[in-house]
Amino acid sequence: MCFDSSDQERFDAFEFIVLIPLPTRGMLFMISAHDLIAMYLAIEPQSLCFYVIAASKRKSEFSTEAGLKYLILGAFSSGILLFGYDRTTTDIN
Image 1 (tube, one colour):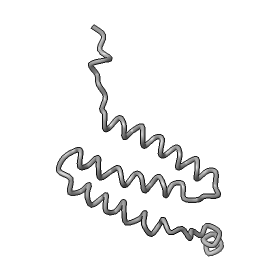
Image 2 (image 1 turned 120 degrees about the horizontal axis):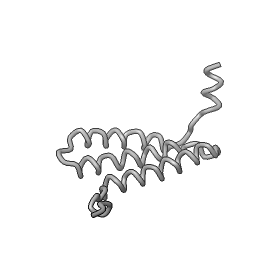
Image 3 (image 1 turned 120 degrees about the vertical axis):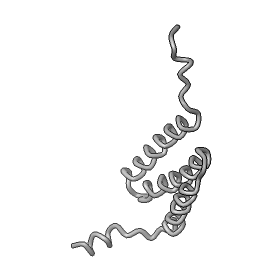
């Protein structure tokens, strides 16, 4: 039963050989970061690799949708992290 499932879900994509070490290097860079911009720059390559891994099944609509949603949510949160939230414009005087 387990072997049948692994044959059906077989991934012969070259991308996995490249995409697994890159987030690992990003994690190691994040560990050695001494400031927030270095940590941000370490998180971004990790998330880009995970977007591709989330959408790795090319024939599945669910995988493509998950990858696109993950990309949009990641871009939104990355923008908030990078540009911050300015409270001075929301204060009512």
